[in-house]
Length: 267
Image (tube, rainbow, N blue to C red; front, side, top):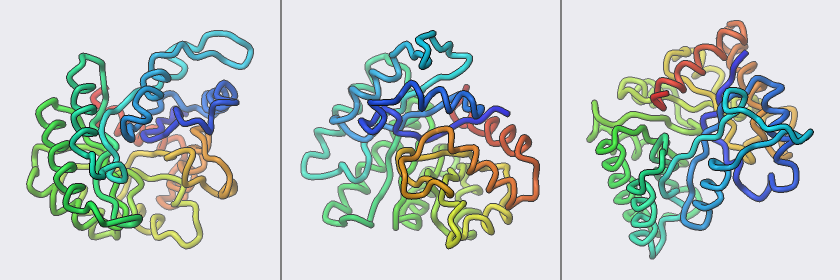
């Protein structure tokens, strides 16, 4: 079984003390690739350091890219769109123009949950970063907390040109179908394991064709580990929940979602 974690903040300080062990558990559970979404200029360097680092197992042996690989994105998270958003956008754009390889423009989008003070700035930043992705033929990775309808409406302006993933999809089945119609993928994470989640029914109705798996680690930890730090190895629990929702074999779910991830990130 080969699994791909399409959204994981493995560069954050929560992993500083046991990163080797976290990666070892990921490898043991079939995780081959982890995609790192950027947040803002405070964390860009950590993303780069991890992407450039020669990873080691707990026993000190080097880990080959065939066994495990971390792949960076670049963008500005909507919660980082504040008074200085033009400065943050300029920094992200400079990175994209630096010649370094990025696999997506992300994590970008809209977040109306925490604060709507900079709603208009979030919309402008989202649109601008979508345009960057189209210019560079890169996918986008979209954060859409309490803002799925607005994100979809904006993406309709770029229909046929924008591609990517609705990270941590949290909408309804009609929104899921519209996202798929627009040619984007649904990122399904640990929330699907929660008893109150509608994701099982949504996944059952839309099928696997436009689904990828993610953890959003260290956040949104699946059951039975909810309340603890999330990590890439737990993506296997999400895969199992998707398989159960679709009455499919886990190996088949892993295969199709991994193929989808490779397709959207153009690997």
